[in-house]
Length: 206
Image 1 (cartoon, one colour):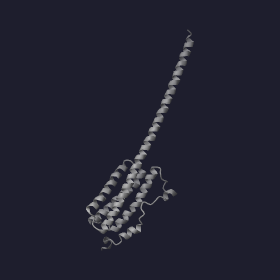
Image 2 (cartoon, helix red, strand yellow):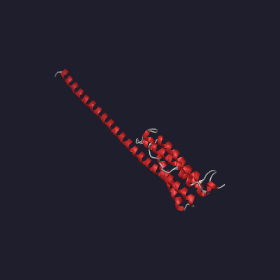
Image 3 (cartoon, rainbow, N blue to C red):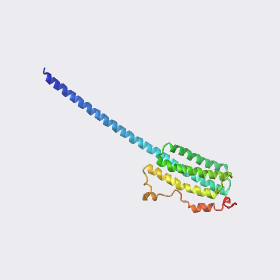
Image 4 (spheres, rainbow, N blue to C red):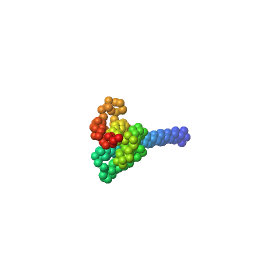
């Protein structure tokens, strides 16, 4: 038997097997990259949906808490709030704070910053309302000042909402024409709020 021919045959077989092995390894690597990319896309999709759900609920609960504060101020203007009125305000506050705690674990800084500003403002107005309710006001605190602070919350809610929409990729950048034409968070005229509490007893005492 020709040794040279055998060596050539063995080399050819080895080369064929080696090429097949390299091809298979290349295919395996490509498949792995494909699976990793698909996993990353799915993970990003799930993360976006988680944020979207969280944002929707935080926005809703912030609006409901703000509305509850407004309602409580009108009650304080007209009469002493009943136990169920106090309970309704506390329920709105607790629902909002639970959702805010969840948001802190999910949202990026671009959303956390305006949401934190809103949280601080809500806490401040809530404190004023409770002090008015308990007859333990700080200097300068009146139903009117609390109502004005409460109304200003709607602007903070709008800023937070725009940050959420940008994070989800469904809003124009701040300052763009489309962003300037987004609907206002509240249609209540600030002058109406001022007039509603202009003759409150706290404003005329002294």
